[in-house]
Amino acid sequence: MDRSEYAIAAERVARLKTDFDVTVLADWGDDVSVGDTTWKAGTWSLAELERLRDSLSLLADAMNGNDRFKSNLGSVTVKKASIGSHGGEAWRGQVTFSANASFTPWTVVHEFAHIWDEYNGWELSRRLEKFTGGFTSPLLSWMRKFFRLADLNGFVRADEPGKRGRKPGCNRSGYFYGDKPSGSDWNFNRVEDFAESVAMYVGWERNNALSDHARKRISRYLKSNGEKDDLFGTLDNWADYAKFFYPEAGDYTKTKRWRFVEGLMKEISEIPFSDISLD
Ligand SMILES: [Zn+2]
Image (cartoon, rainbow, N blue to C red):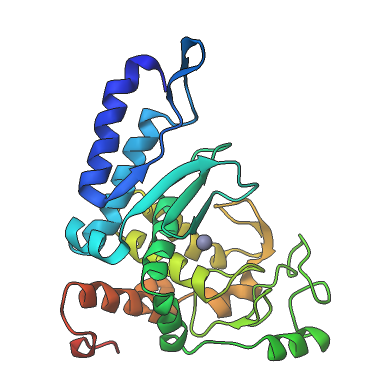
């Protein structure tokens, strides 16, 4: 951030607070600690403040307005920090984006979905797990790995096709996902499932900043084994994995996850969940 951008940045930060109860911890500004006043540029750009607002608007619109967003997520703090290789983290009402790379709209919605879940005692991801027919069993997972039934290198993942732990129960957590998520790997669990399901719902066929990512998450299962996907350039056996992930006729709205999030969005719009036909 340049000093000349300070006023616009301050206005954008103020609007994030008003519209979403989101507090951005500014890492830019005047630094007086060395005697002279020097400008500290920080890691944020004006474009990122705008991207944050636009991405939050997509989630808030899906929730039927900013008031619903605020009452379902509570106060949220956003900062940047060095957090290793992943793009974001969400914990205790705080979202952290990597200071080393810029965040995407997908990451924003994903991390704020975690906050939504957390603000509800992690109950939303439990409900998703149940609704989609999944369960978490470290014991069954261990057995699957022990009997070499997992798409792993023994008990752990390997960075090669067919060994990233995408099949049900073959992840670190022993999460046996039900129905068809848009993807899964070694780090998958019900909490990640919920966040990804919300991002898929917000993006799927809506022609917004998440839609391209959402489409590519599904279309990769039409690829042949050994091809690279269009999102991360990952080589994998996509054709083999299609039966776990590719929705009926390629239509993600036919999945239980889409229906669950749709129901949740209606529920927080104060229509009782039980009044919604879910299948
Ligand atoms: Zn996550």
